[in-house]
Amino acid sequence: MINYFKKTVKDQSIRNISGMEIGSWVSVSNPSEKEIEYLAKKFNLDKRNLESGLDQNEIPHLDFVNNNVYFFSKNALLEHTKDIETYLIIITKNFILTLSKTEPCFLKKIINGEVEFITTQKLKCLIELFSLVNDSFEKLTDDVVKMVQIQKKSSIELEEKQLNILLEQEDVLNNLVSVYYYMNRLYEKTVRKIKFFEQDKEILEDLMIESMQGLNLCKSSLKGISNTRSYYVIFLSNKLNKILTILTVFTVMISIPAAISGLYGMNVLLPFAESHSVFFYLVLVVIAVWIGFVFFLKKKKII
Image 1: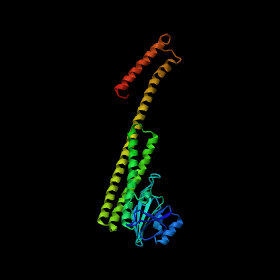
Image 2: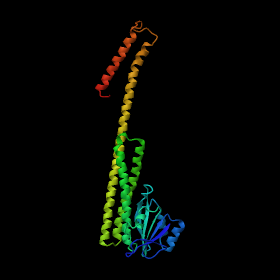
Image 3: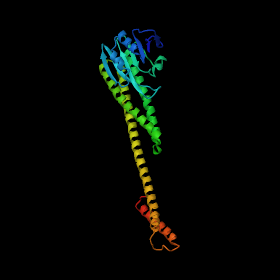
């Protein structure tokens, strides 16, 4: 789908226009192969870069082709899943174009006028888009960290379902660490390669600081998950050792009377075999051996 928007300094709100005009914003989401061909030919854009803008595994970077600047960014799909997809921003001489496989969640904010987005000021639009992308990652990071904290509080009685949730959040955090790192590199390269006004440059530097903070927060949460998993492994190991100890003690306790009863069940002459009280003597012997065995285990701090 291809939509055209335009807003000048004089306009109070952004307008949806019928076609491309100088100073407009071309918003493309989930384009077909024909639409990719159309964009490449109509606006003299690099087709390979347009196709890369739909590749979820594309790493954030900066590319220059035919006097056009291609910013391969990332975007968090907050309204759909916790997936992260590529968000391509193209700055040309006459317009700005954005392309992604899924319509970004912040598009409504721009259309509803919640964000100052003057399409004739392309570099300011670029910074605003970077800021919105950063906001999406910040919200996703906060949601994941919150989920991790909730699961960590119940780590003593961690169930399989909770453990699976932690592992899922760990995968998302690993993706975020990679995204924050490469996005920060993209911001740094953008500051070096593109000439901004000093005020705009400071905003980009603030975005770099936010990215580093998000990166550190993700790393801290990953460390917390790792510690929780290590604790859970130790907890299960100790629990298993206790169970094995109890079973071993129980086996020994059962083996003592079984051995004695087996001995007196032999078809040979044994002491006190003719006595009517031998059963009670044997029970007393078994109880005495049990008490001695339990006393020995407690002295060795086994139980």
